[in-house]
Image 1 (cartoon, rainbow, N blue to C red):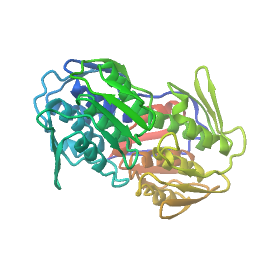
Image 2 (spheres, rainbow, N blue to C red):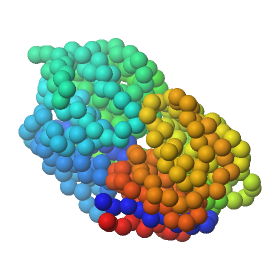
Image 3 (cartoon, rainbow, N blue to C red):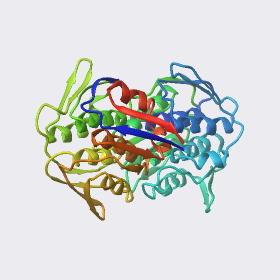
Length: 421
């Protein structure tokens, strides 16, 4: 079992290049199932989740080849199965995204219940509601979900999502791309990853309008062809390095970013007194120019403050003067990192979906565990600012979502070591 050893590293400084977005590339890979010839996705990060998705796609007949530059070729001219390997699917949540494309292209899909971080229920009911509205017959049991399109194929429909679920929006959008007629997704998720997927599908010959708003219109087409597409930069990785500069009172230039994608994070850091400036070379962060103060955050669907940045921002708030409140509205089980931060000397208490942070605490190194992907990143950030050594276990969570994690931090001056026990 591998772990990270993290030391107090002083103020980080230097430049860092953000990789392609994990949460964008996985649905893009799933969408390649819809194409009748080769797709090329560029700037694909080398992550555990990407490796698992590659195995899943290969298990149903996809031919995949990725070069050293991160360009991934996916060819589904020979789609051999509509049932993915259950052992692979159980490894991550995003595996469920293959269901919409399989259903649309082959009229059948069987997907075992997916795994992933234990941050909340994240039910798939909204996905299934969308498939049923398109005319599919859905069967659900404890082990898997199976869907069958009607004899004439999927039909366009108006679908209202009770919650703007990113995964459900993506899955329904992919299924509707080959459905007959027009589909409307109301109360759709507005995340940048939705826009990226729609842009890719449109390059493949789909007709999708309104992605990035709460109403998406999809005109179904008979078939989709291959396309070439570059993944958007990872806004959560961007936010992680913004907070790395802030928590260490450092000075970091972050390259390959989309400013609008991190506007909420930038706004909250500025409230705390952190310098956040857009310059020609990227995004400049300086956490050491002035004394920092606390602020409150409330997670919301995009364009609100992202739930994926809640735990890293909480780690930062433990180090600034003043008390703050963190409200989590997206996932009901996303405070598991609180106990780990408190082991390091933080003073955080929780009541329901609220966490109360008493700031200005001197953190101390401790043995902690990454309870999920973003919580793991938060503990590394805390370790960079803590006295002594922080030992972070269960780092496979972190490596699911950050490319070259140790190298990028070490290039900024962080003292971090990956060791295998």
